[in-house]
Length: 251
Length: 381
Ligand SMILES: Cc1ncc(C[n+]2csc(CCOP(=O)(O)OP(=O)(O)O)c2C)c(N)n1
Ligand code: SF4
Image (cartoon, rainbow over all chains, first blue to last red; front, top):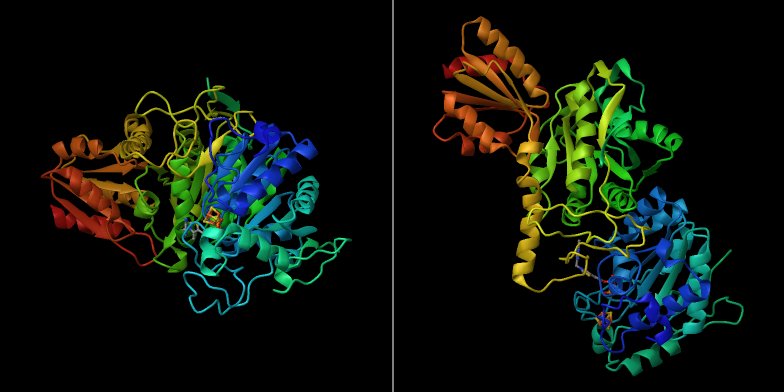
């Protein structure tokens, strides 16, 4: 982490819990840069996360109020905190398994209610913490600990899902394109509405290893090849279909 | 001092109310300013009342998508400094269990009103039961404590809801109002006081929010936004909230402190009432709505010359086994009537020593009649 971002980290925390090459570290840095550029008051910002590797992005790293909750329930905890104290800026950051599988119902209902919450999904398309099982975002045909023949199901396109549930601001970024990502995160955090950012984030340990992308470098190259973005923030299809299109998806 | 006397914000005086409405008014009076819930019979009127009354008082009401979300939102709201509550019945309680453990482990004050219906499963949605006593105490995994109070009247639906908030805030534990459908839907006259004592959360700046020096201590509780950089986690944590999942002795000490902070205060928490106990040979131990029938049966038995008394348990959890032990010394037998297959009976038995205990159980969706209790007493003489 750049020295200039250290002011947002707890001095007591000396190392990140992430594996070498994990995209969650880049996402963490991008989020702090977005916060820095916005000049967000950390004293009035609450970070809420569920359970999984991604849930450790704010907890315990961020020097702010953090609420590390139960698997899948981050958005529901955040809803109560925001409703009870509307002056708090509430940012949820958690994994794709956490937000879209066990917590999918909370995600769509929060989008529907349009309470001012920022929800950031660290989407590595797999369950990292529990050892690489299939997630609702795993691309069809890809290998996981519970789909050794290849995932037979279609992945969720989280952008379409959350947009369909009514969220006014929805974007998809990737840790391979941090500058665009910081831009999306800034817009989402500054939004007075429910805002959602799906962030593609490689997991070399669980995902890469199984899908013949053993090195972090190979995973980043693959993600770069998959993700495309056009100049105006409209989307260009990547070779793995809609669920990897980058950009902002506003009406 | 966190305990203070306030003017009752709800209309004082003599009123005619349903139990569920009285519980909602008790919550408002205790200072509840957040309600997150999901409709379920026979508790829904509490939610409907809160949906009307919270916003005008600057509070927030959220109808959540399910009970998991409801209790999760209540925990989130509680950490912002709001007194927070949800209400439910059997199936909803089952869904709340994981987060109940979260609240206990993170020492989050929350009040849960469980208006019990006949279970298990969907059971008889509109009919009475008292089958959740063990579920509120043992339903979440691991070891933890809760407080559970058992009202027998509409009056107590009000006053024990206030008490549940006070205990929950003071001890930083989940507290239940463990009512039954019959009391929730009962309508009777209540006297609502002009003023009442309520307990506000104790916050000492820069004190560790999750631990103190006493092995049964209750730490100070800040809010989000107080500038304490709070770390709240359901993982094993040190006194500042840092995850600390290595070290067997550490986890052991934490779980024991959380338990002891409730168990060591039994004398303060546990309440009961005794009727005709002085010379009673047979003692009916009853709680909740069943205690009403039991009191009637005891009076009838007295008129028939039987030396019987009633021990009415108001606090169910923590369980006052010391009280049972004391009463057992003068008694020849206990009768425990319950609208379940004997949940408190087992607790009484384990405390009663040599005193015989007879269980009267009924799970047919209706209340136990005084006649059934009288008949059971007759069999015991
Ligand atoms: C109720 C419950 N079920 C299952 C688990 C086990 N669990 C912990 S993390 C996790 C998956 C996390 O995956 P994801 O949200 O994608 O985050 P990642 O680790 O990939 O960043 C699961 C299933 C749990 N903690 N709680
Ligand atoms: S398992 Fe995957 S997601 Fe978890 S820290 Fe390692 S690389 Fe990151």
